[in-house]
Amino acid sequence: MKRWFVLFGLTLSFLSGGASAQLPDFVDLVEKQSPAVVNITTTQEARRPKRGHKQMPAPDEMLDFFRKFMPPEGEAFLPPSRGQGSGFLISSDGYILTNTHVVDHVDEVIVKLADKREFRAKVVGTDDRTDVALLKINAAGLPRVTLGDPGKLRVGEWVLAIGAPFGFENSVTAGIVSAIGRSLPQENYVPFIQTDVAVNPGNSGGPLFNMKGEVVGMNSQIISRSGGYMGLSFAIPIDVATDVAEQLKTRGTVSRGRLGVVIQEVTADLADSFGLKKPEGALVADVEAGSPADKAGLKVSDIILKYNGKPIASSIDLPRMVGASKPGSHATLSVWRKGGMHEIGVTVGEIKDAQVAATAPEKQKSNRAGLTVSPLTAEQKKILKISSGVLVEDAEGPASRAGIQSGDIILAVNNQEVHNAEELSRLLNDPQRKSAALLVKREDNAHYVSLRLDK
Image (cartoon, rainbow, N blue to C red; front, side, top):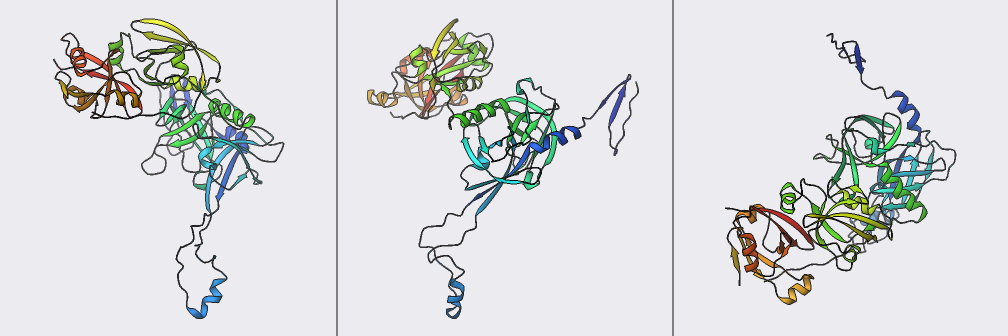
């Protein structure tokens, strides 16, 4: 076997048994695709403070001279704030994709093309949930990107970003796909593409290309302790971005489907508790009264394994699938319930913000779990919109290790509703039981907690 290295040169090659491998050459890709990448500059005019702001006094004899250069009395001079980002042309007549956070709450958006022409852009629409924005400039015959299929991306393949990090226009960086389908906090509707491509402030909204020169994602955010690149970059899959853009273009808003359930991940312990062979699907921890899920007969402790025939490997898959469904459409859920499979049909609703909560107070300890609980009054249950449950006054031992806290409400143990401390003790003190799945309500949310019981 023969192997050689050329260090500090232009090429790093490996020869082994006649086969060779070289680092990819991005030159042709960049030359062909960079004309469709744009630089975005935004301006937000200063919002003057209310009257009452103190002026710095000037010498009497100079007051009249300085006054002409000062803002009206009671106001302070504040310069406009400016921002930068990137974007890319998706049509030859001037439609541009970028991030919402690049153009949100600004007064002016200027788009600069690779050929140095500048245009004032109109913000067609923005979507906070996905961080996708659609712009339009008044031009024709423009270069545009070719869109690819992010579903064909493979972990480890090369990808390339073009943007304006820190204002350095048309900068090119490359790396590999680190992971696919990443979920980030508060980002339930985007299965992010994680890369190690160098992305910094100013890259936001720029394209992520595969080696075919197709846009597979839109660079959106990084995870960093310094504020700059630290090897963790995240891009919105281009199919998600274009779906949002099309809705913004045609309707001005984005509609998403909803079921009206609170779900959680199925851990190995929870899977064992519910009789599943492996941890998969989305566990229903709460069903909103009157919601599409409630009308369809979905119940707390159901585990949704498929949505319209598509497997749900992780609970984060379900909001994306439902969100992509058209409100009013029919969907079929494959549900694991009490040891058996069921098919449930549901009419998808339209997503909206909402919900409510509360808490309040004889105390009794369930020694095996380490829980001290008290009953709930009828009024408290009415306020909380629940029919069962006990209030956790204190948690120690297994309960504390499982994350249960004072103020939590235990609604059920292994699908059996709990109405008082005696029922809770009976269910948890069964000597044959090694673990239990507790349905716990905390503030507005209910979720299952897997509890390993002491002997």
